[in-house]
Length: 339
Image (tube, rainbow, N blue to C red; front, side):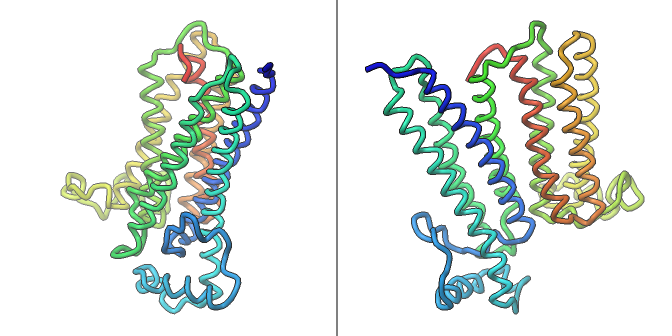
């Protein structure tokens, strides 16, 4: 049976681009769920149930009564009304509903491609990695939520960082596949891989520190820049705090590290710009990356100075996607292999 390979490539492009957009939306909704402190409003995983929201007062009372059992309600939201609970419930519900849709939108096209395009020259099973990682993300999401149901007032910031990092990794993998399928041109003269890898590690570290800061509500302290309430180093931290095993549980230290990593990252990006000019590369890629970095720095400062207003904090989180994808283009054009 003759199968049109061009149709496979066309459908594959459409699927990858749509999935990429859905993951961005997922990250945005997840960030807003965190910023509105809504993530613990549904206290059960409900893998196969909970697709529909509560429709009557008895169902609402059930969910609300379950929420009243956890520390967040007892220690922070005690006395919350049912109407107030509905607001945080719908944020978490939207996040979970979108996650279910992403899961289905990942699997069903893959099955379609396997059934109808298995024998085409360009068919590859590698895209099933996306589905595997999306499923893993669901488990990580519940692993994160479960950390705030028994003893803690909030979810573990370590688990939160894993959840966000995996979402961004999935996004980057899809974007790399998109660059592959569009046959993005590579550099003729390569940039040192050591420098590119180091900058990538700094970007990842900065995102992880940002997740720590979010999980610790660390943006609510030291709301000044470039100083930290008049000093370079946080004044509520001593030497013993820095060498303590609880280093990453201290919001003041985490905010300081987040700032320092940003300055270090900027320094090495200047070196990268120099290499672009020296080697006479096409400048649009580095300019776009520079814009992403400068915008992210601006959003980070505004978020801090505003006391973490939700609109700025959400944009700052989405800015990390802009930074990652623009930098990934540079890494891809410098690579000599495909995934």
